[in-house]
Length: 161
Length: 301
Image (cartoon, rainbow over all chains, first blue to last red; front, top):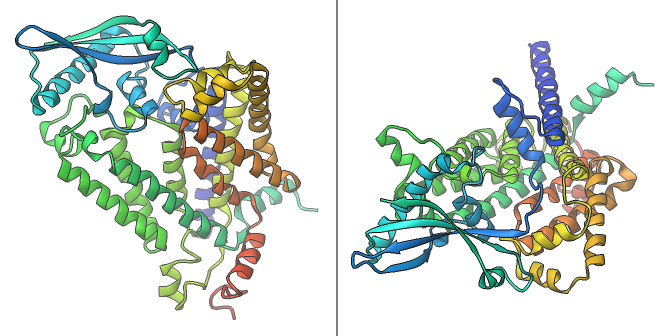
């Protein structure tokens, strides 16, 4: 019984070391595995590659909502996501999607807008439609939004309904 | 002279004092309480009642909405369960059951919500909980010892294996984090720090540093970060260098917290205890406890 337990533990150690070694290889090469072990290697890779770089720009989502009367307002959806500012931003930009092509992301952005309209209606702000844009601006040491005041590039993402 | 195979066996299977693992269990449970409390505070935004939600599973039967897009009441229930399990983990009572429950709940939370912010720290938490499934976490400072031997000061020896798994994972994390910076673009000047401090993660202090620090100082700061991260995986294991590794890790993680509000990795600093000799940790704790911790394991005196 004890021998059997030891064999099991030995197997656990060897498996752990192999998976971790493989994940280190992925970290250094960005050659991602395929096959049944992929999820566990990616899990391990995730534990050793948390921060890989930073861009020169900030990106945020904004909504242009239209009232039944036809007037439009610009609104942020940021406050509908949980966490610290960076976390909220990461969530709304759907950064976990490997395939970031607009056609892949659009259905999810539609769901954002659908929920945005419902949440706004719950607070008495009725809109007939909403359009989602991304805003991109250069980072500025004077403050997070300071670069935004100097100029933003706005890109259409989705419209609902 | 010990043969290499004997050394490997000793490294993974030596019998040690359980106090290191017990201290880790208590510290980790307290840290998780802080983490889950921070999540609980946001409960409204985690539900359709006040937030935009998007479960990791796209097409699912409607009844699964109960757990994948939970109501406010169900979400509160989830956090109550989390805290009940954390109390058991903290007190060392039904420890492995508590770890299993916490693992299952964290997996649920990942699918419900956290997948949109899949992170390294969350995986490290889950890994640590998985290691707590191995025997030993409640063999000191626990209600399990109180039940079995009549006192929370009593203890039973354990295999060093869980401590080795945690030590190896911390090493692997620093190894990956540090060494990939040698090939990642951008890690050649302080510009990378300037960008990080002025990003969505930047704190007031981070923005202040970006505004006031000359680029030569940012370059120096980047190089120091690189040296710390490259050296950590080795220095943590070398007894004479441990004090520098611990100090370097503390300064590094604290700076990350202060400049970029990323505080979850701060738990890695107290986890360095796994690199210390468990006998030394035991001796030190025994002195601090006023010799209330018995010198020998329960049942041998």
